[in-house]
Image (cartoon, rainbow, N blue to C red):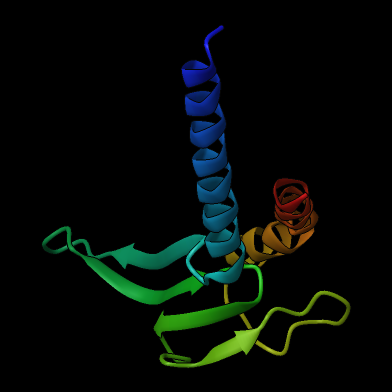
Length: 113
């Protein structure tokens, strides 16, 4: 293998490694891992009325529509959440996000090392 191709591969792997670290860091720090919208379909004209909409990340949940519109709360990992979510499906999905949190944190550690 020539020295040019070795340098090119070293440079490319360094660039892709830095991009990977940056992207995993952005993914862990943002609040847009999960976008949810709950609504009902109106029978008259088949339109959807949004009852609740939220976006969630690893660290907090922000409500976009519904009774809690504009409110952001921290994700509770060791205590019960301080928010009341009307449907069981949404509560279970948010619980699964909290359960999966160690995986992106470990991947960030691995990419950093």
